[in-house]
Length: 82
Image (cartoon, rainbow, N blue to C red; front, side, top):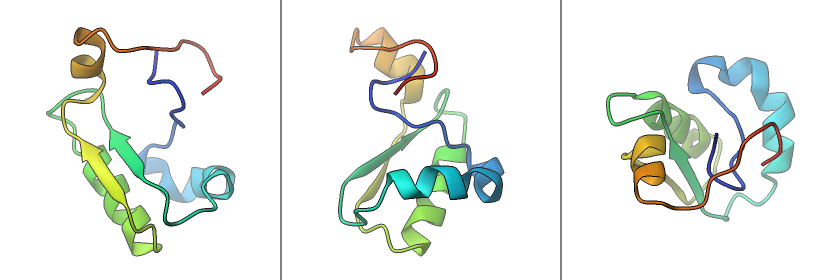
């Protein structure tokens, strides 16, 4: 599952997926929230840095990630669609 509206974009696969995902993020002033599979994962921090280095001005990291989101009972989606 994933947070509704989320795009699957792993920091360790940035160069591979950037050409597919970055065109979906044309507004560099829009807020972007990066999250991982938990607080022990640092990929969201790496992704946020990469995006900020590309000029995305409002990149934040949700450190609780997917487990905290799901535990809080917030909306979730399953499948490929955001």
